[in-house]
Length: 412
Image 1: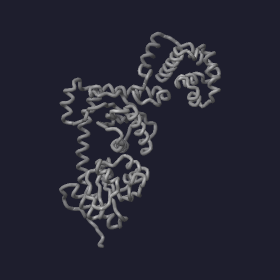
Image 2: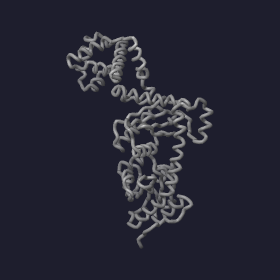
Image 3: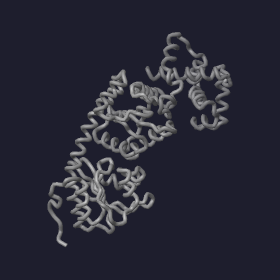
Image 4: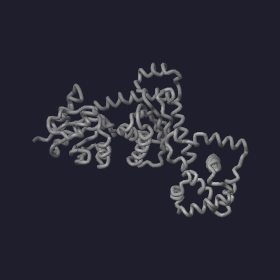
């Protein structure tokens, strides 16, 4: 067969579906065209036997998340982002994928989509060239779609910021403005903030947006970046909302760390609400959770949600009351003096013990000491500070004052 060269797909096409069918005919296998977030844009007819993943992808109009994760693990998607050359994707039995050949569609160096071929036998050089020419033909169509998408996102960002800043006071006014944007502001919602703790470049934004789009755990109503923070408006399921939100946040942070090699990220969410006018409060609450996590990096490390802050919700108010009254906790002063004189860490010991609600094993594990050693230290703490660790009132007061002390040291 004569080698194919030049602009193989040079004509105008009525639709991407027509182009997908033409590519399929030339490559003699089914073809799927996706956007940069693995949503199906077009696909060819498939007369031959096709693997179940392609069927599921077409039915759902997007690639299933477990398939995307598998493609990341075998290195297929990272390779597609790195190279303009076709990539052979091996068979992945765990998710039912047969061998594929894929190529990224690019505008300059930026990926705007993908073409996936499902051959029954390996491609020869001629078909590789056809696939490369197909990527060029698909490019213009996907660029136009991406431009429309970008404009839509820019438009809804304005409405999103108005929601976050409490611009609307009447639901009727919000609904009237939202007619132009069509954000689905129904059901239980919450604001989630992912703080990178540093400025992020365009590449990080693009990769994070890709990750959010492909996770599929919870519906994302709106999103935007602001000074190193990814702000999301998330819709929650009807049941097990708490667990679904925790899983989403943990999964998102884990994947950002894994795929982008970025650590130190913190995340927070505000209260859940079915009232769009209350989203400004949810946003402020999420910001407050981030502030608490910065003030108490150890004690608040595992807290994501505002509702789970407990005493941290009003610790600043308590600190103000203590400061105004001039009160000093004598037990803490005695422990502090003992620590200074003996190079000990009794304050850390009692704080950890109280933080773990008196659980000896958990507290000892956190302190990296034996439970017997902890028991001895607690006895010394009771003697030195003259406190009864079986008195709930004394323990709570001591815990709050230790938190206030940490807060004051943070503000120095």
